Image (cartoon, rainbow, N blue to C red; front, side, top):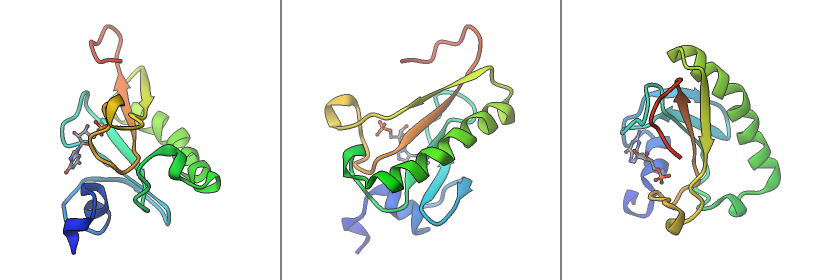
Length: 115
Ligand code: 5GP
């Protein structure tokens, strides 16, 4: 039953379309549907952990290893000068999808993207 799944788990399972940026055994990266900047990418563990602290350390390390390599690649792909890499960890922090995810938001000189 897909009703029990997070939106991102449905994306991982191919039930909702997404634009793949990167994929391996544990990690999936795809373009944000409402980008704050061109190339705004979301990186998730395929397993639907809700928050950072729900992830086993080795899996968090695997995902973060991908993020470290992906951030400069995303910057280069869109000609950005830098990127903001961020997690909204919990509802009160602005986490809308209860499946932990990192935002890679390309940044340009004098842009107006937060935080
Ligand atoms: P949050 O506010 O939870 O940190 O970020 C959730 C992000 O997921 C938002 O930037 C939102 O645009 C993105 N998002 C929500 N639903 C979908 C979807 O179905 N597909 C894609 N590609 N992104 C989504």
